[in-house]
Image 1 (cartoon, one colour):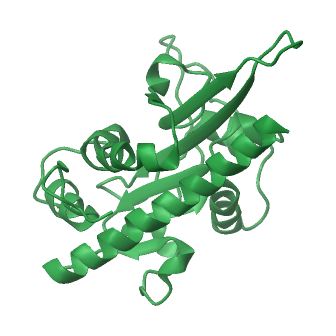
Image 2 (cartoon, one colour):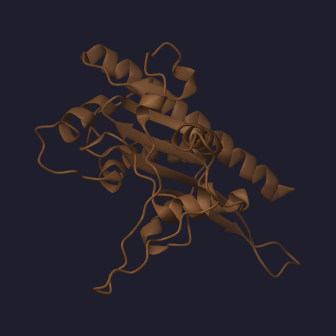
Length: 230
């Protein structure tokens, strides 16, 4: 898919310039990136991928991920229905340290836990000043644990004790540093797409990212549909 004027933001490099620049007074957060950048691309890809309309997980807290596609199918003779799911977790780097925050709940439920894959996101899309990257959740966790906890990762992260005033101090896990990835741009097949300064390069890298996004989503959804029909 080639970016067009129908998109709210033409390329991911444009988004970085517009909203992650030091001159911008606010930190919009990952939901802003979803609405302004990622969702318009997924809407354009939805029909070709055969996806249903997306589910807003803010209203479904038990669905992991920031952008979730969910389809259930009743099976004759079975009490429960079978379902397909595509869950994309979205991360946006903080303006102060340039790192991707990992909350205590995310660590305990999706990284340190040994739950089945159905209870974790399938893919991660992250934006930072270096560019954007798209990884499978397991690959993301492998990079994260290797660098964030080189001496061994804890099984879970406990919350700090309640403060004397009655409020609990939230304790997050170590952040994900985009500097751990190779941003040289020599191998876009690894899902890392660097920020580009010049317009022609921006459009080329944008098209490459969208094609990669489509391929990764298609793989997850096709595998899910195949399992559904078995």
